Amino acid sequence: MGDRQRGADASPGSHSRRDFLILTLIEAEFLASRQRSNAAPATPRKGKIDVHHHVGPPPGEGRGGGPVEWSPEIAIEDMDRNGVATGIGFPGPMPVSTDLERGRKRARLYNDYGTQIGRDHPGRFGLFAALPMHDVEGSLKEIEYALDILNADGFGISTSYGESWLGDPKLRPIFEELNRRKAVVFVHPNDAPCCTPATLSYETQPISGAWIEWPMNTARTILSLMVNGNLRQFPDVRFIFCHAGGVMPLLISRIAGFTDWPAVGSERLNKMFPNGIEAEFRTLYFEGAQGYAPENMQALTKLVPASHILFGTDYNRFPISHSEKLFDNLKLAPNVKRGIERDNALALLPRWRG
Image (cartoon, rainbow, N blue to C red; front, side):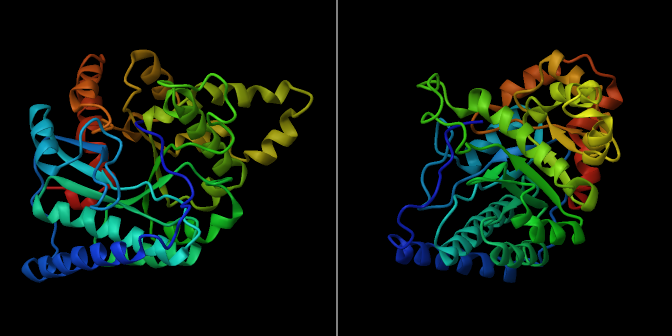
């Protein structure tokens, strides 16, 4: 959750020299670090793996959405207090830019920055790399760089980009490559043009999109991926959705029940979801930040296997203790709890296995 994510970049050339200098310094330090290290993963630590951990943003890219400026030292203190061994860093989201070259440089800046944090603090931080999703060619190049050079754990993207949800055909080449790479893709909700203070009269401070629009936007983008065939055509992309799937777990049975609605009917529904909407939803992964209330987890566990649920905290938008307390209050079998805390993430993120 957290503060409103930034929209289109109104002045794509205004900071190009500053961005170039910052990028040059970070890349120089990163390359020097690679010479000091053979890029092998650090020895994994024991403890929880947090797959929803906001890092940064990089120097010169603003303050970020947390109550205080993010730093690895403060983050590690909070992690240690709450038994979190590793946070998979999400340095995004990438704001949409009309300047494609600047968008590519910014993605590289974010990803080199996130990787350097992991190198400076071995075993503590992974990386869901940023992609300039509005730029297909730039995204394909960054996928190659992030996986082959940075050894990223996967990619962190938003639920929508402008008017495009993730199932939009324009984004198909990106998902084709992510599928070929068998990539993990962490999806974080953001504001969408449909539902902002400009269109919603009730959305005034302190109410923001994070209250109810982001859970809805998670559902919107999941449905977009389903009805455009992405989940069936790209089965090797392992999607992780935030906040226990938003409101989508509550909508699955509603949509499945449209077989008895004359406006839809079973024949049309079967064409949209050949394997059944429940089966498609079951293939997805979810982290639980802001969704650890028993009623939320009960809804989710009735629809997906426990092995597809991961531990997440939404740090530093929330203190880690917020999620830790709610998670500890759940009545879970020991093996299920151990899986959510760590083992399920290890199945997706092989470099953290002992």
